Length: 571
Ligand code: G16
Image 1 (tube, rainbow, N blue to C red):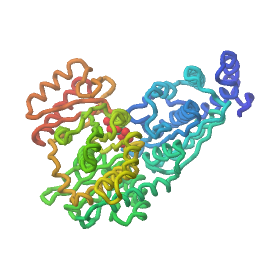
Image 2: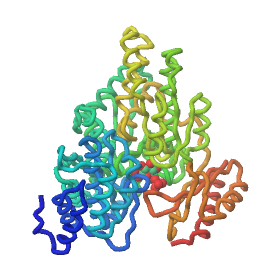
Image 3: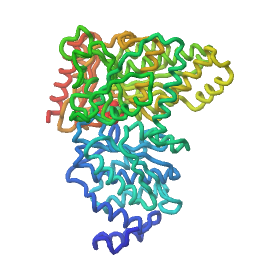
């Protein structure tokens, strides 16, 4: 507790006037926030928004934001009966000088979207007094009781960014400024590890990082043991770790796995810079090899993680490749492989298995060919706005919901009721029978694949075991369907929020007239499709274009980018 006398005089008199009208927040609590927030003044003229996946900005601007998100996380924990909440310091695919903060709800999923406006408000509160007023109003509205029945608990993780440790200290102070709340530093982790651990903790399960690894290893081994005849020689997988935390964690995991041969490059230990010319975002957007890969890798099965290992893409360098071009197997291809495998198991189970509602969630970025492929398989396909928080919600509507963004962020969700049905069937079917093996595979998949959030480590293990199960090379997997050529570009504009889109982001409502101009461009190309949207993680407008040839897709993307510049101006 902070004695009132330790407050500056002005703050202390404000406290007295405010506390007269406060019921939910005690004087000591207000004093605590006033005192700690003096340490983290908000930078001038910066307006932050919670965005697609939390707050992101240049790391030098973020201390006050992270401190305030620490307060929010404690309140979130208190609101949910002191369940553990996660706070992750990362800017994922952004450049190394950026950083960010995202919150994991006790379920392991993203922070409830209902709390995002409060996050925006407190992040932008211009003074300690305004911050306290906003918190006071929110605490009253949400009926959060501070300090009576114990405090909140927040687990803090960070990626390998150099600014991470300093920001983590700010988060700690924010968490602890809510009286009775505890901050637990769980160290350097991938984002999905933290989400998994938070989920496990709140389910009363073992929730350390070693438990995470043990879970992956056990379920991977179980799936390997269930492969009928291993038709494939295990060939080496070459992993690009984006010079981030994912490659380092894969090094640990590799030590426990006997059925996987992985060579890991770009671990960040050899002087490489996080996400610079490396990583899933780079490979997926540019469709070229990451640094550290070249002609000696032609034909090899390769994979890339992003900076915090919540995205995964595969690629190979074709023998006819001139220069540095890759054949990309993105989130859509991973989704298709997973869908095929799960559908195969349901078919083996027979009529009962076929009653399972298996569905797929994609975004406007999904390649049209992938959507056709899963539809032809007989699966239900729904579309959601960009951001895994939106896809996750839709995937929960199915017994088994597979969601992936083309950028490689996704997972498979199993409903509780379908999972207990599967576990029951494991007892009914005789051991070793085809049906028993099929339900056992599905149960193992549900354990292997992260149920909280998209996870590159667990996604990679599932791809690897399915390829072994099918007896497929990466080239054979790539033949599932042929992508329509596509191109993504980003345009820097003075104010990206001037672009407003429809809910599925396929059409721009603002600036007025831009959609008609885009439509006129699209009409010039065979199989043309294009859309624009403001990024929620970078200060840019994103442009996506698809057409029947790569030249046309490039040209359509460029002309739409020109339209963006002429309607919004370029910065
Ligand atoms: C985050 C989100 C993803 C989203 C991506 C890009 O990824 O988690 O769902 O696709 O940002 O978003 P935007 O196009 O709005 O910038 P990550 O891997 O950076 O956390």
